[in-house]
Length: 116
Image (cartoon, rainbow, N blue to C red; front, side, top):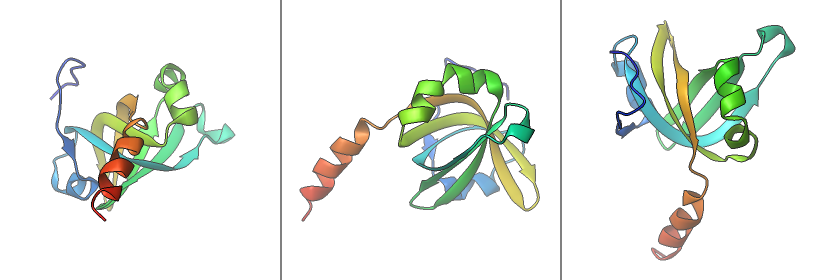
C-alpha cells in the first residue's frame, strides 16, 4: 500500500506493530523519549516514542526532519505516520509525516485529574 497524505489512519498501539506485515502504512502516537541525530548518519534522525503499550523506533529522513523541525524541537507528544520496516527482531517505522499533538497533554491532564 502506498502512502497517501489524504488518508486518515487510526492510531495504533505500538505493541501492534510487530503483528503487521512489512511495508504496512501505520499511524502511532506517543511521548518523544529519545531524539538522536548523529553526525555519521548523513542527516538521518532516529526517534523513539512511547505509549502505554511499548516503545517504537522511528527513522526520519533529512527532508522530513527539515519540514517537521518545529514539531521535533518542541513537541512532547507526536503522531507519526509511516511505513513499517522489519529487520528481525527489530521493527522500525520510516516516518512519512510527523504531527505535534502536545496541545492534547493539557486536555489529558484535565481528564485524568477529574478521575481522582
